Image 1 (cartoon, each protein chain N blue to C red):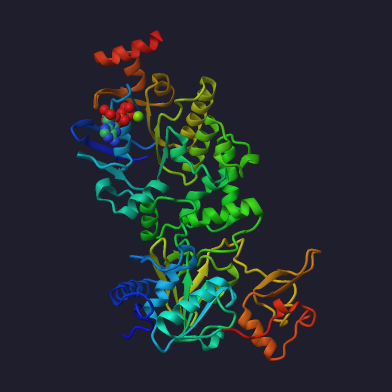
Image 2 (cartoon, protein in one colour; image 1 turned 180 degrees about the vertical axis):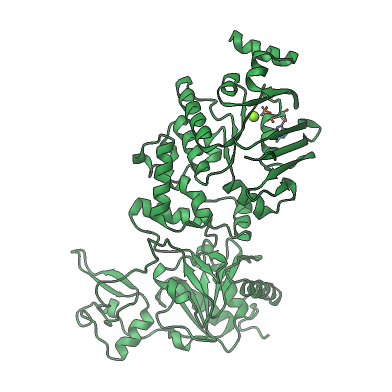
Length: 258
Length: 300
Ligand SMILES: Nc1ncnc2c1ncn2[C@@H]1O[C@H](COP(=O)(O)OP(=O)(O)O)[C@@H](O)[C@H]1O
Ligand SMILES: [Mg+2]
């Protein structure tokens, strides 16, 4: 741990033509910290996540990232090879739709092994061994290693995405609604697994969710978004137990009422 | 250039088109294994017939060249015969079936068994030039992957092969790394021929007509077949020598003799086989094989 943030977002703004994706978002994220971004559909959560992950360009604002060697870099100034290397070594991205985050046509083992091979892994037995190990850690039966994700349930696909991302021991993982669309019991199991892995590996996570219960369970800090702006931010328990902002109060009470 | 037959420019293509294709070829030679886009022209034959290779050959052909055309390993198939005829008619060049006599060999599938020498050019007819296509259908993305030499996906494909079959089951179009940089599809040659590409004295040119790509392996360029440390690249081996000419360590085709399961394994490279038989080599079934298979070493 160090007292330099892993991520420093400053005035992040993204317009889609005349429409606002998100506007003027600033925050720090430290190593090992879990930040939840909550808000209604269309409030700019996914836009913010893609800006952080350098997948879209900001209209204004910057994201500073502290590399493993300690150097702090402006993501917009990274070269394409640097950006791609960072994305597949130091970062993970778990997508809401597993089909966007997995190769549906290749086996679970190859899905997990892909990053290793991209980094120059050329020993089949070792790649397969590591893949098997990771399948175990995300509670996928080793007997499924040669099956494609097409044959997997929704929960298994999300767990496979997680294994595929964590195999290179990233320090930071982005998650966009990783549990939505799953049955409640499947959700609970997945959340449990994510919580365990995050704690074991000391991961920093930025997780987007519209589900305050997910935020409560996983995150240390929370940012509430509305119409592309952050309306309230703070420690998760404090914000959810004692919201200061009127909109957050509404959001929290509607969840309590549900 | 005088037209060989009324209505045709030498080797069919007009001079401007040939210059455009030659520029693509020069660029391809300068960047070994890199797929250079070119404006493919309509040729008087269907795409599946190797129009890419034909355009490359047409662009490098000179009046003194001697052309050999093979399909599989044979000079006699319809495809090979019609391409040979095409150039005889449109360019009036000499043709041959003997590898050693040819200055240009146009091929689909095989590299001749007889090692090619300096000054010879091997032109491949390529149906699918993009080795990453199998796992990454997006053209913009494959271009980036080549540009950044991100070739992990190729090993994902090999991994899948081993996971499914216990070994790399890809036997044709087996991907290679050229000059330590670009990954290339030598499609659709059998992997048996991959080692012949390595440090070959001949210039190797690849033309894909429908896909509008030309790529090249210049003479004496390292060509490495992709593999894993614990599953090293291996070529096919054959238990018995050629039944007609007794050659070993060459690529054999299975020929079905009758409907009672009779079969024999013979050289796929017919010129190589005939040359050996003419020199007195005799395979186990040379005396008994039907005439249409054993044939006699005569070609037009
Ligand atoms: N690619 C896009 N083109 C145009 N508008 C977009 C695009 N992506 C998002 N938006 C708009 O930006 C706003 C925020 O969207 P988004 O970040 O997806 O919100 P959330 O993830 O919170 O649902 C919405 O008004 C949405 O319609
Ligand atoms: Mg969203």
